[in-house]
Every structure is written in C-alpha cells, then in structure tokens.
Length: 116
Image (tube, rainbow, N blue to C red; front, side, top):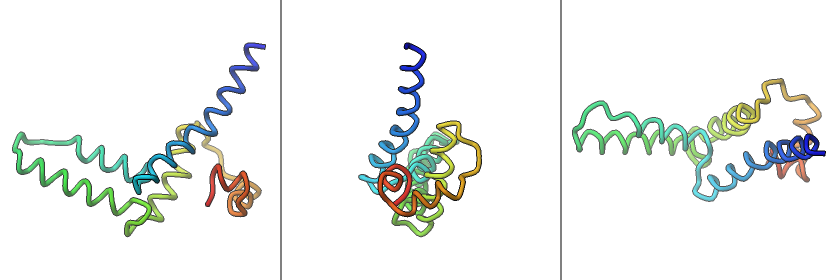
C-alpha cells in the first residue's frame, strides 16, 4: 500500500506543481522562462560598482520582460516554459503525441492542465 501511495503522490505532484507554478507566475505577468532569465542575469555582477549593477539589473528586467507572456517574445517564452521547463522538471523527455496536443488545444481538463 505504501508504494502505491508514493506513486500516486508523485504522479499528482508532477502534474499539479508545474501548473501551480505557472499560475502563480502568470498572476505577476511572468512565465518560467522570463523569471529564470531575469534571475540568472541579475545574479551575475562581475564588478562591485553600484551603478553598473543597477544598469545590469535594468537590462535583466527588460530582457526578461520580453520573454514574459505579453512581451515581444512572449510566444517563445510561453512555449519554452510549458513544453521545455515543465517537461524537464517532470523528467518527461519523450515527444508529445498528437492525442496529447489535441487534448490540450481543445480545453477541458486537458486544457486546464497544459493548454489554453
């Protein structure tokens, strides 16, 4: 019984946590790609200069905003967030089959979990 419980828990966790993360970031107008780009670019401060660090943070925010859902590259950011990062977190490296894509595009429960 314990193995079955662990398996079910992991299955639900892998399904819903990426979805919850996406919803949380969407509330702030972000996706995982834009958020990750901002955080990674902000973490690199090669000099201790305060002005240069401020400029770098501004550039990081601008670059990340372009990958956000309403940014210039929003489609790229959304696609890489949903189909790249979420699948990588789950360890899902196989191709998405046509049925899965159809289910996501039609809405319903499949649309809630993975599509629009």
